[in-house]
Image (cartoon, rainbow, N blue to C red; front, side):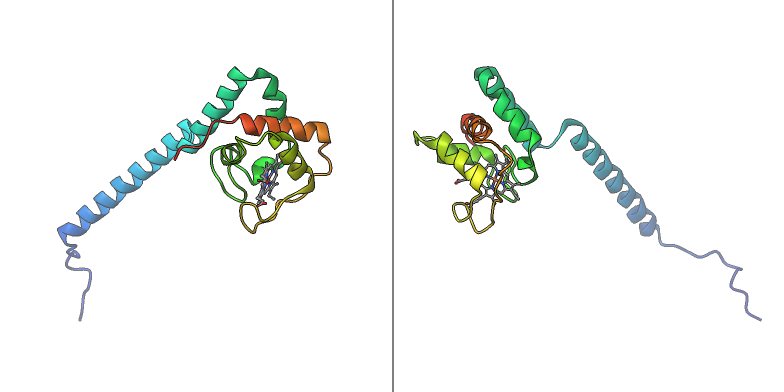
Length: 148
Ligand code: HEC
């Protein structure tokens, strides 16, 4: 007759260590995630710093900031980070030297755009009035240049 239960299964010692080290790594990972969620990513910090800098130096542009943040812009644009569209700081940098930049960008905001930054289309925003679009463009243009 066979009895499998007689002898305790011998698990190798290293297995215990692998499990312990694995658990430590998981805990460290969660801590790291928690800290990041709490203090924000570098990109969040850069966004906050840029937004704050403009609000300090050009308080008259805060209205434009509110319009951008209140519209759907941030679904595709980051202040400091590009995802669907270019980062707004990059846009500011590109049009620094252009005297008609506010009107040009205001037109792009209302009419949409494609082909300047890539092949992704920016939709039109007919609900944004021409005056609002200029305010948005002026705020975007005041953003400090992106970090290299
Ligand atoms: C669905 C995604 C999407 C949304 C929403 C969106 N954009 Fe864009 N935006 C883009 C893309 C993609 C481009 C690049 C277009 C191109 O290459 O011509 C762009 C380009 C731009 C540019 C640069 C245009 C140029 O000629 O260089 C500005 C300024 C801009 N967006 C502002 C805004 C503002 C302000 C809003 C909110 C009212 C907004 N965007 C909403 C995707 C979006």
